[in-house]
Amino acid sequence: MEALLAHPSIVLVVFALVAYLIGGAIYRLYFSPIARFPGPRLAALTLWYEFYFDVVCKGRYTWEIQKMHEKYGPIVRINPHEIHVKDPSFYDEVYVGPSRRTEKWHWSAKMFGTTTAAVGTTGHELHRVRRGALNPFFSKRSVTRLEPVIQANVDQLCARLKEFAGTGKPVNLFDAFTALSADVIGSFAFGRSYGFLEHADFNPRWHRLMMELSGSTHLMKQFGWLYTLTQHIPQWLVALVHPLTRELFSLQNSIADQIHSIQTTPASALSEKPTDHPTIFHDLLSSKLPPTELTLPRLAEEGLTLIGAGTVTTSHTLATTVYHLLSAPSQLSRLRSELATLTNPAEPSQLPTWTQLEHLPYLSAVVSEGLRLSYGVSHRLQRVSPDTALRYGDWVIPAGTPVSMTQMFIHNDAGTFQSPSSFTPERWLPSSTSGDSGASTIDKDASRLRRFLVPFSRGTRSCVGMNLAYAEIFLALGALFRPVGAGGVELELFETDGSDVEVVHDFFNPSPRLDSKGVRVLVKGQVR
Image 1 (cartoon, helix red, strand yellow):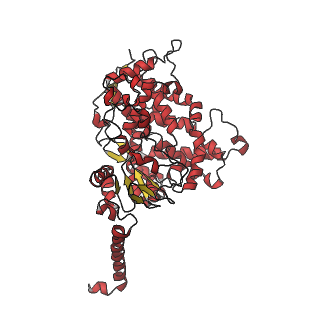
Image 2 (spheres, rainbow, N blue to C red):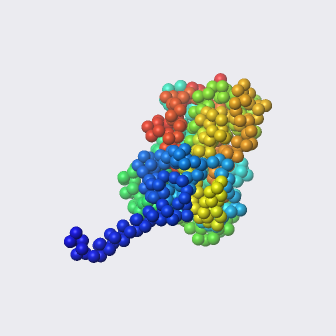
């Protein structure tokens, strides 16, 4: 004590720190604008509560939030700053269109370290500018125009799967579909395939890397400075510690080189279409974005974000959907029979178009149900309405408060979806086409249900790649389960059960149990 008193400056610093902590705690518990909202006191007091469940317990805070709702009701305070609502009817109040200024919460936006990409942009106006430049490239019209690019990759996937026929060697569908999605986004947006489909085992390192990066988001969200620190460490040193990052750096450098090449092309040449098809960078550099938005680092970050966002989510949806189909022979048989109606006798191996596949009622129902049970992302999505207070029942959420909802909760809501944990495509069909003797137990108001199908979120910040994802899912399922002579592939589950698709960890992207070996299948040959 005498030693401390001999250094009054240290005593002052310690006293100030203690006073700050006590004062902050009192403010958060009693004087915060959201102090009255129900929820655990510890969660209201500190972000370390969330840290424990998401970082220490590996992505488990989502399930802790579920428990909060069971105890406190549909609206809870889940940390010192944020309100979470668990009520499907409130979704459109949070995730709105351009009529209301909506921002992203800065604390959660830093979880991927991509604050200059559209997806990580917090401010409403700047996001509108950045997102507006991306929208035309990912419109349904644009995706339809470049559908042959997607079809070529889907055909390659089917050809690769047939190489495993009769070998007895299992294929991990998470790896295969991640390879497909990466090559699709590469071919579609960047004009170059990354060749993952050509790898002997579909390059399992890429799926593993994407999931590990996804798993680091909780730590990055808590300590945003970590990302800044990693940017100043030489790539070779990071790769030495974490060999998987070599592929990421290779891709990152490839994107930067591609942008630099386009940037150094004369402006007159940019207006001309490339020999194959325009890349996303041609579109951005030819857009009306100001020069500050066209720097190489920002565009490279945008490109890398598109790859990250466009691979694991689509892969997870496809793997989950295929698992459920292979687990339900009657549903699989019905799907194959429907797909057989599109077989062209003159060209049986020709894959139907996305438009044709979209018009198949049962396939569309399968896609909707697959999206419902794969959720898109598992993490809650925060929105801030800086100018508008939101009202939920008797509760008024102050303007500027981060408000979030979780797509997984919406899709599993028993009040909306009967038997929500079951894979039931028939729920999306009108009664006259359900073909199910137990149809009376299934909610047939498909148009009402569709309001609560939100795998791509909704509003101005919904997933920009939604149309590309839909095209890829329809074309992949249509190709895999088409009949004999048309390229269909017969798959059989291998040492895989429901726990391999059940989401029990939230790494922003959904994750099954950590020791899962994935959705594995044996390729039996062509469908007969």
